[in-house]
View (cartoon, rainbow, N blue to C red):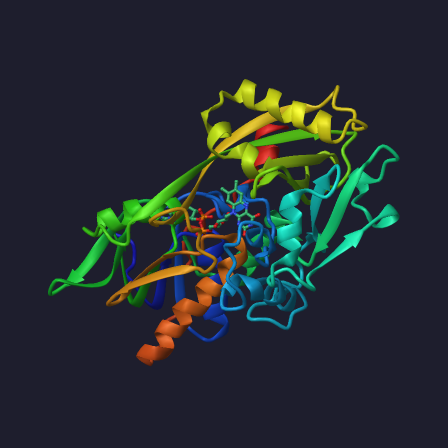
Length: 391
Ligand SMILES: Cc1cc2nc3c(=O)[nH]c(=O)nc-3n(C[C@H](O)[C@H](O)[C@H](O)COP(=O)(O)OP(=O)(O)OC[C@H]3O[C@@H](n4cnc5c(N)ncnc54)[C@H](O)[C@@H]3O)c2cc1C
């Protein structure tokens, strides 16, 4: 029987939400244990595009209501962390791009007119031309308009490495989770048979939250999955590009981010509308054919003849919502000692931690005294998806 433990906060799920929260709590002197049943970041986090949205994209369809949304402050919060002045120290983390771009192929489309008229966007975007264009768009054949958004793009593998370092000895590889009850009250969890008592238990297991809740005999908060069918393309001819390419609708027709692959080549990772409903319904070969057609049409000067292609199906996990509204805040629900949530975006990890800490402050929760943790079985870091799929 593994040694029983006691801690202030027991967190389940080591994606960006659990790891960021863990780093922040440890910095404030709380004792923590963070349980992970796979590789660190191997859920949605390492499959994300790494964009630290400030919400500009949502102004395209009028969903951003203004400064009240936490998302508007997230680029600043991440920049502070990257400069070592924020809630946690991300000083060693690689930023792939200081900006994300909005790219309208052809002439100024109607949707951009209302976009630039919206209050949320005014003063936050600048048009770029010539040598200031993203490298992949610097070609005499390029026609279109490009605007710079003050939104960072993170190298997620290096982010995870730093968050794992900040976790110190608190990480625990664990598969089976059962409730630890005292007089019908949840006082901790039994992880692979090990009793772990805690003042608070936080579930940040992404798509795994539903299953952990079920193991605890709970049905709320309810979760929804939003399936995506992403495309990856790797070729020696690719140059960096971080952009939402606009189509006729209100959603980016394609969102391209660029990531370093193991052998020094770049991978373009394609999301946006292409990866949503119609894209989800397509078989991988068909999805690749559509992506190739799109890129050939948008960037005819890029030689894709030797490119390697792959697709990735992955679900975004979110709280169940009515209608089509997308949250621009992290979500957290509380039931006594148990807190359950989804950041809903990588960018909102700081907001998720804020919400947990606000709950602790409201309840007057203070760090306790515990013996040092024994050496615990440590979960491995997950690999970037392109290294697995496009070796
Ligand atoms: C294709 C795609 C692109 C995206 N792009 C962006 C973007 O550009 N910008 C942005 O802001 N957001 C983006 N997102 C959203 C973002 O990735 C997620 O909101 C965020 O990563 C969620 O983090 P998380 O820690 O809650 O979940 P996850 O990263 O899914 O982590 C949950 C962890 O819990 C673990 N776990 C699950 N069940 C258990 C269990 N029973 N016991 C122990 N551990 C368990 C999992 O193994 C996993 O490591 C994207 C998402 C997808 C899918």
